[in-house]
Length: 111
Length: 112
Image (tube, rainbow over all chains, first blue to last red; front, side):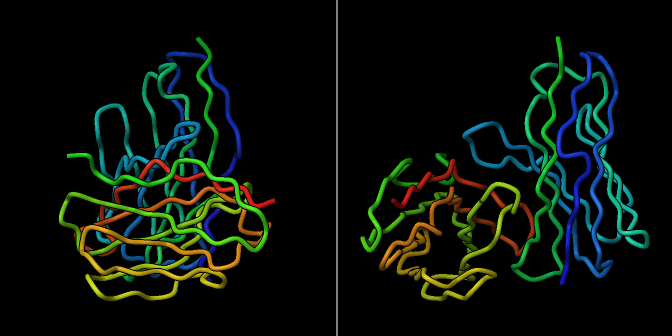
């Protein structure tokens, strides 16, 4: 059974710093990996999707990498801003309908 | 485009009552999903649909039923609510499976 872990569960950093969020998964037979953002009381917003054949994806200040063989992904946020404060979730798919989510990292950017 | 909408936003039920959650999407997506989110558990798939008229069980289907009579709508039913079904419920849709799932704002359900 696929298990997705995100450590730490919570992270606080000063504004302007670069930071890395981690995601690990137990079964490397994945089709893709997605990073989502969730604001309090809101739904999920897809940030980046990495296909299994890709190593990384970039969108603005966000860069996500994928290392299937080691079962790891990282989300790099450059020049953090208070508006980046949210919970970040990663999810993996084996190629069918069943996304498996991690429990998320709650990020707080301190002004 | 409204994207994915969910009705209602909040609901309180007594044990044994029934209710239906409605999910609607205006993106002409084939795939639709219902998840529940609980503290420390992450999101878990309840049921999903790969097209109009089809439904299938996800990871935690017990106590729930679904229907997809129209392509744009996906209904989640609780026949006899239990306190263990207190959760936040999210609907999602996607055109290709499992890429690019779009999520609704969620329904917060409390069963007393």
